[in-house]
Length: 92
Image (cartoon, rainbow, N blue to C red):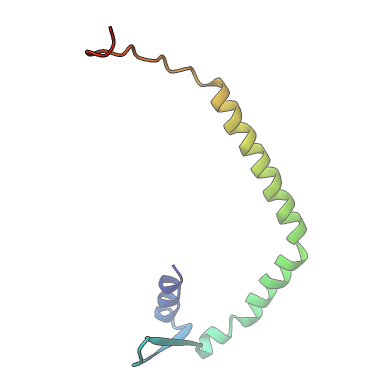
C-alpha cells in the first residue's frame, strides 16, 4: 500500500524516487518543489489531529460499542438453524 501511494505521489510530481543498485535494494524518496508546497497544509492536519485526538478517540469508542451491541443483538435475534438428522449406516 505504501509503495502504491508513493508511486502515485511520484506520478503527481510530489516526490522524486531514486533507486540505488545495491543488494538489498535501496530506494529514497524526496519532495519536489511542488511537494514542498504541501508542507504547510500537512502541518495544519497534524495540528488539527493533535488538538482533536480525545474527541476522535471518544467517537471511535462510541462507534465500536454501538457496533458490538448491534452484532450481539443480531446474533441473539437470528433464528436457530435446525440440526439435520444423521443418515447412513451409523444412524440407526
